[in-house]
Amino acid sequence: MKASRLLLKIYGERCDGQWSLICLDFSLAAQADTLEEAKLILAGQIKEYLTDALHGQDREFAPALLSRRAPLKYWLKWCLGIAQRKLLGHQNDRHKAFREPMQLIPA
Image 1 (tube, one colour):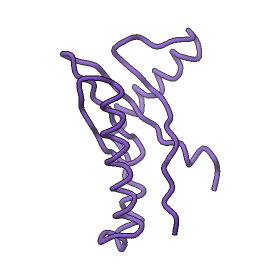
Image 2 (image 1 turned 180 degrees about the horizontal axis):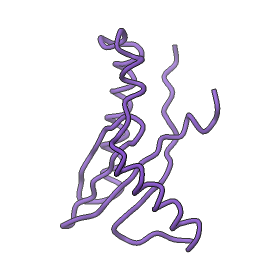
Image 3 (image 1 turned 45 degrees about the vertical axis):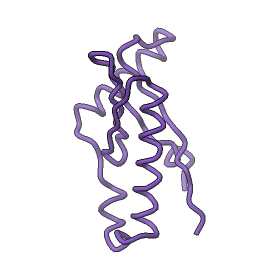
């Protein structure tokens, strides 16, 4: 497996004092008052999602669940955020695009 497949793409926006994050690879979302809180909530969702898809009651649907992607508009926002960070060396305070390591579950 390529190392890049082990990094999940996450896009976040801050609006009205709340951070909303979306995992583009699995179309999962979380919302919280701080970016760190939202990351923790999303990480828990991803862990539970992968556990159910790989080892739990949804195992028979794993191919569909593991290839479920977020809508195109979020991928475009993520790409713009990555480009902004690479070209300008930073991102603005309301939008974040980043990669997070996938938590692997032992077989």
